[in-house]
Length: 76
Image 1: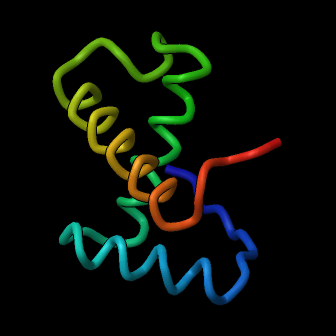
Image 2: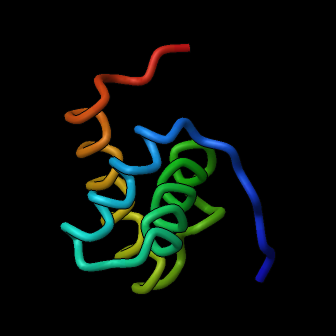
């Protein structure tokens, strides 16, 4: 497994930490779910194929829905 360092505004980090706590998971797990969900939208075969990944995808989609609720929809 790789380690990644990212920079986030303090308020976004605080909200992500709060969301992770509310879901009873670590911030790392939350970010992994978000990454899985994003990758699945790009190419479903990247993360598909077994029940564990399907559960992670479902959880990731729920996280993205919650982020849309908190921060508003993503705009490019």
